[in-house]
Length: 231
Image (tube, rainbow, N blue to C red; front, side, top):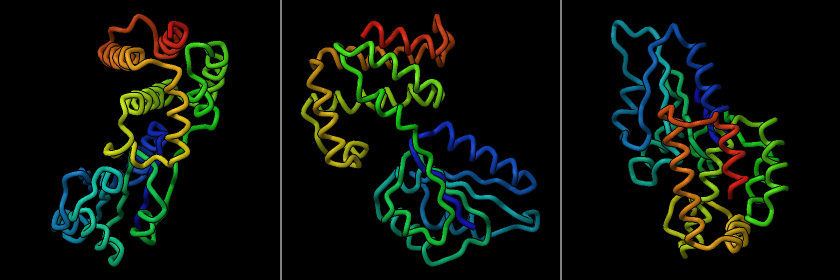
């Protein structure tokens, strides 16, 4: 059986992946990096066994969203024609296009999308709209974890910085956006100078470092509120 977990709500998809691993705790669990593996490794993982392997769960991370090369095409062609001997989970850090998902069939597909209020919050952020943005941030906290909100906030400002700097293509994550999404981001970017966006992005990277190293003065929820207040 093939299961695909994808979408930008990474905390939720990771939690589901952990639950699935727990359900298969009696099996050998093999985790592969989808950005680096080739067809031979995939075949070995899904077809071969030893006298000690009764059953196996194979997890491949970021095969669909993490690369675009001939190796990926060979693996997709193989998965589209062969039913794996062992259970296979494809975990993707982003939402995968329907056309790409169709290459891996039949499969159980689970999409993890952030709450709509989170996107409203992200689009509301600009220096002259702090009050509304703070209200939407509070609403977002009721629907999503601070970690998800922070991840999406970093992503939003990375896009704004790229577009403000004149980069409209050539970056894989940006290339996957629809034209209407780029137009909305471009309009939002007009409310900031390039220097402001560079400073904001650097501040977000600093917050990330402090949270990960235990150097933050406040928890992530309070930190995000202060970040927005001081924008």
